[in-house]
Image 1: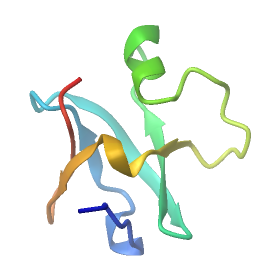
Image 2: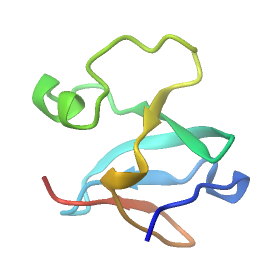
Image 3: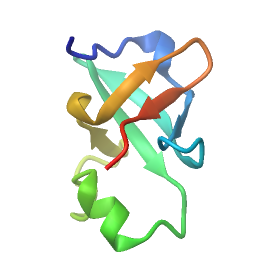
Image 4: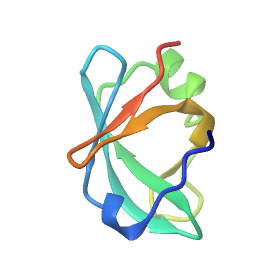
Length: 81
């Protein structure tokens, strides 16, 4: 099942598979979530999410739907890598 982001997901924390906070959804545009990552995340982790390149839009880094395990009322949980 493909993940669909909505405006209700804005401001939700993004956590990895172990529950570690990795960022927060800044905005959702056209069913794409843009995330402000936590400072201090390793380059390897950022690269796995496709966030190694600089943020071109200023809205955060696009979160690929295939990286998401589930969206709850309180957070967005990523799949394990």
